[in-house]
Amino acid sequence: MQDFLKRLPKAELHLHIEGSLEPELMFALAERNGVELPYASVEEVRAAYEFEDLQSFLDLYYQGMSVLHSADDFFDLAMDYFRRAHAEGVVHVELSFDPQAHLARGIELDVQMEGLGRARRQAERELGISTALIMSFLRDRPAAEAMRVFEQAAPYWETIDAVGLDSAERGHPPSKFSEVFARARELGIPRVAHAGEEGPAAYIREALDLLDVCRIDHGVRCLEDPALVERLREQCIPLTVCPLSNVRLKVVEHIEEHPLPELLASGLVLTLNSDDPAYFGGGVLDNYLACHRAFAWSTDIFASLARNAIEVAFMSDERRRALLTELQVVESEW
Ligand code: HPA
Ligand SMILES: [Zn+2]
Image 1: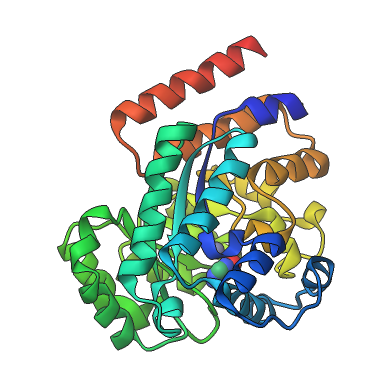
Image 2 (image 1 turned 135 degrees about the vertical axis):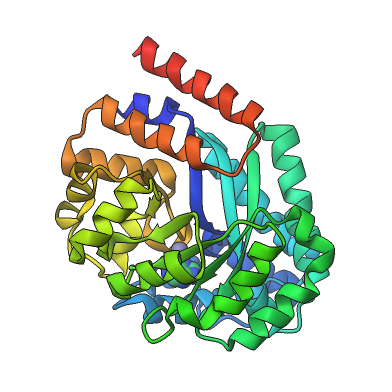
């Protein structure tokens, strides 16, 4: 099964590129840029990754990304991740980034976009990975700031595949960002949003009704509202589920208690993703393997999850056809 899961062509739809910053690179970039870290060693960094909830993780996540200064730093961050993902059998990566978090530290959008863009092009060329870029807005900062940043990003609208919504969920409902998302819609830019991770099922409804999103990131708390589950199923709204993240942020206590089996039984379109692989104990393959250990699913179920991700990804129809064929080959050879 391990071999099968590795060989499955996996598309990752929910990844914060800043959350892929491994402690080794964090130290290297801190030294490159003269940034002082509150840790003495890589081991000490890893030992600090004991989270109580989303906010306690976010505090370290924002601290960690303070080592990113130049376009080369953003390039190294993304390229490092693409190489690891490639080694796990990931064929398509949709990376989210948090422009406001970097702008607040004085790192210009041009710097962020140059580094990430260069890494995307190199990954496509050297690793054969396709990528999409999701510009995420920080929901715990003012909506007016998100709107300013989005307008400032006008030269890059063509290279942005979607806008997203992340950071501290509770107390920051999707409705706060109605105008920003309406602007994205007006421009023909697709929309996704984190909802129902720590926040209530009502936030998932808001994301659908007010932000007109085509996917929900996390969304696991939809189960608290059976009518909503029925709506998600009927409208085939995909959930980008991140099981290891949910365990590490105590959305669930143990992976065995994760609602994935119930979500599956409800007939929802589900995908498996890593969220912040450097902080939550592994990449996409590790998330597949964790589900294998916890739920002992058949190869058919894993193949259908991988197929869902390819089917709902932001990619060309030609690429989608090629990856679906690749998936079929792996399935038939098994
Ligand atoms: O898991 C997450 N949830 C919300 N915001 C985030 N920003 C990075 N990771 C996350
Ligand atoms: Zn996330």
